[in-house]
Amino acid sequence: MFEALRRKFAGAAPAADKTSALLRVEGLKKTFGNRTVLRGISFAVDRGSVFTVLGPSGAGKSVLLKCLANIEEPDCGEVFFDGRAMDFRRRDSRESFRRRCSFLFQGNALFDSLTALENVALPLEQTTPLTRGEIRDRALEALEQLELHEHADQYPGMLSGGMQKRLALARAIVTRPEMVFFDEPTAGLDPLRRNAVFAMIAKYQKVFGFTALIVTHDVPEALAASSVVALLYHGELCFCGTPSEFEASDNPVIASFRDSPDALRSTLAAVRRGETIGEDNE
Amino acid sequence: MVASIGNFTLSRVRGLGDYAIFLGLCAASVFSTRRLASRVARSIYEQGFRCLPVILIVGLFTGLVLGLQGYYVLNRFGSEGLLGALVSLSLVREMAPVLAAIMLVGQAGSALAAELGIQRNSEQIAALDTMGVSSHGYLVAPRLLAAVVSFPMQTALFVVVGLIGGSLSGSLLLGVDPGVYWSSVERAVKEQDVRECFTKAVTFGLLTISICSYQGFHAHRIRRATGARAVSAATTKAVVLSCIAVLAADYVITSFLV
Image 1 (tube, rainbow over the protein chains, first blue to last red):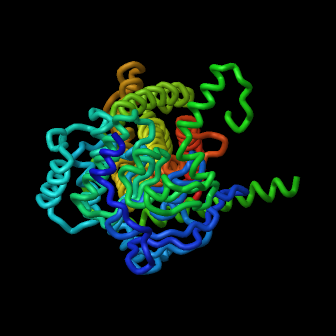
Image 2: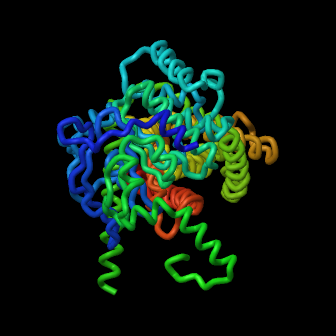
């Protein structure tokens, strides 16, 4: 199943170099109180690629994404977008970055008091000089592209989980961003829905041509749908390369993360045999 | 001991500074937020029309009680004819702005704090920021502008209903001549009293709505609570602080205007 997905969506791409990168991060650090979450992260995301940051829960993936999207302020480090250093303290820099990027939240962050159409129209209404008619047309077009036009007048609470995810994506792409950040897009979903969400991201990334930066801990789906994967572990990026390089790596951290279902299977087999399990296996 | 007093003082000063910055951002965003008028109209509906029943009921009973109490006090001095003056001045100068503001805090302010708290929890406020939409301008500024309109209107309505309540208890139940009551009202209330009433209403409106917005907007900063408990704590704090602020501001304004 994952092989089929991979063949369909992923084109193995090398890690971006400094010149072709749409987003480049250098030495990003973030500390909350005494806890250091990010310890000098550096990577580059190529234009038009699907870049996925993998990592266990609590590794700092969401914090990394929030630092990049200017929701959290990093302690130090630099973010370059389209070759220009972003100074998020400056309003023009912040606004230009936000015009060109969108963010899809883990819980979708849809406005429950607005209809699907109003949710999609909101960023256009507030950030563009378009007329009401143009905004409505663009919002309906986005809903149609995500097969939600029949639900334009429904509130998010009346839609299924998958539809809400698509609605959030419609809102993210309606401004035609160059880059979309996805924060745990498959959190809490069953395997079939996880596949559907990654397929949706890959499909619409091809259709709209945006660059996608995804953080997730779903290894098989991410390997199938991404052009580049990185592994964040204890606040450090310990791998960045193509999915095939990730799968071939003998790095013990990558292996333990990648092969966790096999490890679980052997642990369970040991439990069934009545063997004592060491702490490492727990 | 000294350190804890110092920490407490510093945190309060920091909090006041943060509140001032919040107000500044809201004021600045008024000029940059698009389609503000429709959101202001919606907020006026929420703060005004939806709160009408509570204003009418509390206003009526306040007037009824003032009429009763006033009549028995004035009766001792044979001055029942001044009942209208007592009820009207009590309502216009003190009772209507204060009670209307407290009722509006209980209904509209608490709802506002809870709504913003939930929006903060579900990352809707962060979503606005990432879209390049000013969350202060989109969520808070319309409510503040609406308060400038709805609080004086609700206060005026409170006064009218209260005067009718005073007339009901004074004239209908206790036998004061209605003509005497209403002419006493007309003679007692001066332009300065009305100005004081509206000054208080606008000030209380801005104070309470800004405090409720601030608390809800920063529900994620509540210590030792997250999620629903943080929203609940923020809402409680918003209502308590707003009521204290109304009473404190009432004293300050009265001492300047009397």
